[in-house]
Length: 223
Ligand SMILES: NC(=O)c1ccc[n+]([C@@H]2O[C@H](COP(=O)([O-])OP(=O)(O)OC[C@H]3O[C@@H](n4cnc5c(N)ncnc54)[C@H](OP(=O)(O)O)[C@@H]3O)[C@@H](O)[C@H]2O)c1
Image 1 (tube, protein in one colour):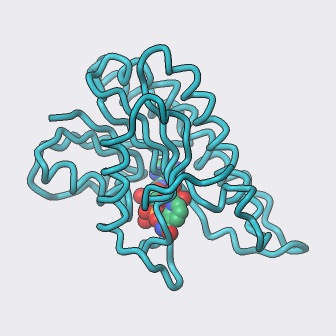
Image 2 (tube, protein in one colour; image 1 turned 90 degrees about the vertical axis):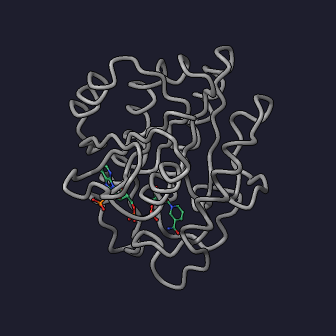
């Protein structure tokens, strides 16, 4: 059984990762933007308050874990809804997206990479987005979301290189267009299917594949 830490378990993909892993008997450290949203289900849960823009909160969670191994660290917390068009952009919201989607991940990696190195499975999964792929961008717009996820991928790639000598595997994942609050619109992928598919990738990925970017279906995505 694994020890797993997941950010953004308040709703959607993060919450589904947490409930699926716990239902399978794993120990889940579920972190919440607002701990009032804690999961009320049977399972080996540890609940933590963690707004990923508040760096002091990371240090408090790390103190609680006290160096405990983390087999799978999942960076999931993120915001989208970057719909304002050129000429009416909300730059303050773009900045917020970078603080949550990008810097929040970097602080997560900075805080917990030693816990991952100390574990048996040594896996870091980053919930990114195909919107962060520059090669796939044929429709423009979404400046803040695209850029925050592209920068997230750049950080994930560096992390993969830096942690390869320690045997840690880092993978960037596109979850599909998922029927969550973050997905909205005409999402095509049920959240339970997206999460179980991403779990399969996290489970099977080998050290030789570290630093790659995958669709939830398992196909490699271009940068
Ligand atoms: N759904 C899709 O189609 C899709 C596609 C590509 C990528 N993604 C990515 O998937 C991840 C999960 O999104 P989702 O679809 O599950 O949407 P969601 O239901 O809105 O989940 C996003 C989660 O991030 C949390 N969060 C927001 N700001 C935070 C902060 N400052 N600190 C900690 N947690 C924070 C949210 O908490 P609150 O509820 O409290 O705000 C929520 O739990 C995101 O990284 C998103 O970019 C989703």
